[in-house]
Length: 95
Length: 496
Figure 1 (tube, chains in turn red, green):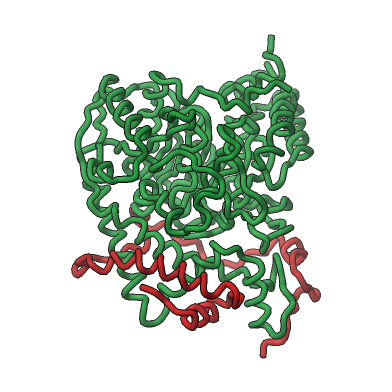
Figure 2 (cartoon, one colour):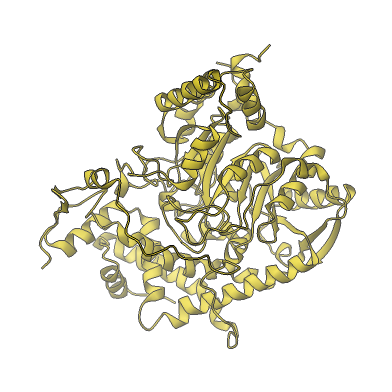
């Protein structure tokens, strides 16, 4: 199913992903080709079929108690921050 | 008398570990041999994104000191191992082949990394891969392509191309990759080594950078069936930090791999073999392998996997949907690349626009679309239902057969650059590897032969959940009768 550039822009906005104007046509074409390919699934009769979201067999394992544990690597994790302010990650203003 | 230093690269992991445990060799001399090999071949193959010679020698010396104190060393003592760069190693760069994580050093080790340290394995480096494990050739690495040791103008496969090539060229005795739709099995086939995708849940994903959480599994690369089992044993089992990991995954007794195939039933899925596009050499190799297993005492039975033909379509909806969610975390806030641009939303868009390569963007957009309002039922939900049918196909086939035998790939390794411009053509490479991923069953690629150009051919065995032992037992029987796994690429025969 072909898709147009305006659809690419809408999805890109949802995904918070910038697609450069020079890339938009190509992306629309490639996505369109893949979506056309996956159309084959429309022909199947799936009326009575349950969806699989997890292939894990057997009973789910017991959950651990809901107890807080200290984070041992806090400083190491914060050290990776592009812009750190003490214990905070600094970002541009939200709006 | 111990073998010449350069010969350590020819030894199996099993032999190396035994020699180190018994004091017949030091971990340091073994490590030096593999480091020397990689010094020679890695620049040409581009297998590694980050080599770790100092860390490796320090680990090796520490092991030797422990042995000198009389301590008992682990099952992989002194064995050099390489890790795909989407496996978190504390303080060591982990890029996932992406610019968005350039320079990123995780603050923790993956579960498998902790297990390898406990077993005495020596990590020699992080290997190249398709960006965020998305690809079938390692050409999607944001850094550089890796080359196939059998023909440097060809791809090693992907996404775990670096890990497969490293073992093939003997830059490491073992390696780990990850397999979501074939990313361990396909490069194993292209590089002439063993590659196992464990049962979903057999190996903890804690510390594996997530691509598609219902499909991802870390898997071993090795040069013998027994070494594959040895590495699987070192990493399998329940981990409390991964709720999908299962206690049913238990180590394999290596001796049980020697039992041969008498009494085993091998299922041949004739419907997927009927497809066009399978290279004649692969088809011929497949028929020879089936006959060889029959001669060795297995019975062959025809089975069908009627919905396998929908596997690619199903996968490129399910996996991309999950990826669109998993890759939402790369936003420039807490780690990795940050692009400076306006307000917060603009920062997200610019960071992700600059930091992700084209294939990753394609898959995120596809997945976002498949999950979006108005399309969720038609695409994602529908694909999940087809997934149920594929799972059932395997369960039904595996009632009649102990293992299924079929190709891993439709062709042998293709030239670098041949398929990069046609995403769909690249996806069609995965036609034989995706079904087992969707079903969650274990699947093994084993070296089965070579084509007219001398390129490796791998074949695939798929089995019941948590029956990796059966797959390796069949592969071991084949290995005992055929020397495909023992052949060495020319680049690995060079003497320094």
